[in-house]
Image (tube, rainbow, N blue to C red; front, top):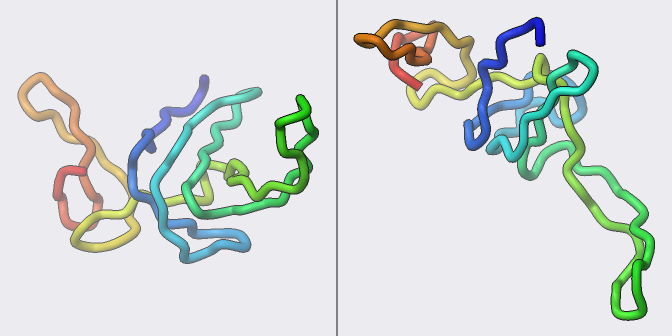
Length: 106
């Protein structure tokens, strides 16, 4: 992996590009494939997907699921200032994420 992933699971993010621009949600999943980091945000980037019946009791049909977004299209949300970039500070021997605008730990 070439780039450092700054957004983690359960972070609050805002979508800054694409059809759902301006929506906020929680990161459900972060994954990497072919050096591309993508995130799944709860309640955003909803797509319709055909689901095949697996058994007699299973319901098939068309389901709405959250599709992954590129990590560059989301920004972490600070409680004070809103969507922001992330910086790092050393707190003793720990490395903590901080807001670039106000300096509050995230």
